[in-house]
Length: 281
Ligand SMILES: C[S@@+](CC[C@H](N)C(=O)[O-])C[C@H]1O[C@@H](n2cnc3c(N)ncnc32)[C@H](O)[C@@H]1O
Image 1 (spheres, rainbow, N blue to C red):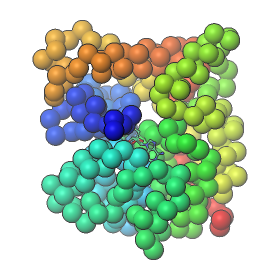
Image 2 (tube, protein in one colour; image 1 turned 30 degrees about the vertical axis):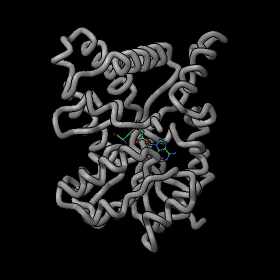
Image 3 (tube, rainbow, N blue to C red; image 1 turned 180 degrees about the vertical axis):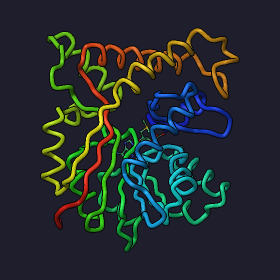
Image 4 (cartoon, rainbow, N blue to C red; image 1 turned 90 degrees about the vertical axis):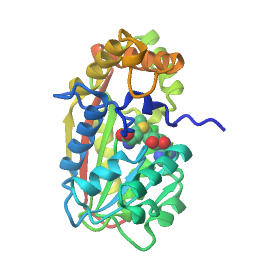
């Protein structure tokens, strides 16, 4: 069965890299580097260190798991990903990189399924729960916050990169319809796209405090759009590790134009968010 989250982004990456996020384009000029930069920013905001026990929600093809292990030298990684093909790819990647143990502590499954958490964590409690460019895809992000809070150690940290509705969107009925259509097409529940005050409230209600929210929209949304725009004008042979197919190019073009539009009209904003578990569930 074909999957919405699959290995398509491999074509955007350099040889040996398999990132699949929007990237943080502050200094990066290459897709793989921009994706890695977004992951690095998240890891730094989360405060990862050698004692960290990670639960990674939506770990993609596993590049970020390697970053946690090799760059931040974390103690353990666990995680769940809805995608079968990506989870298999991540397992291979971890095994080839010399982390066969980590390959056994990541599972395929929906983050909103409570059994998935015990399947990967066993009796462990993570010090950090991460969601890199994926929580907007979860069936119910508020439920994810509540489950994360229950599993974290006391004073454990949740860190994400995520979309929110801007405080002053320039949006008439037509723009609203376009937004709804794009969200549906991109497998994003409309209820997940909320303003910052509501997002903060959802975190507080789930038991998180010390909430930090950093606006990185400019280095993500128009920058990803500019990268795809430039890619469209390149010769097929220059377009990445493998030849980027026409269908994939159309998909990225539609996504990037939408992101540029949503940024220019101040409809969506993109953030790094972190919070600390402040009370018991
Ligand atoms: C935009 S990709 C980001 C992938 C990866 N974090 C990265 O930065 O390369 C979104 C990821 O979220 C995962 N995902 C989406 N819905 C999910 C769910 N309900 N449970 C677990 N993972 C999910 C997808 O399979 C995919 O790996």
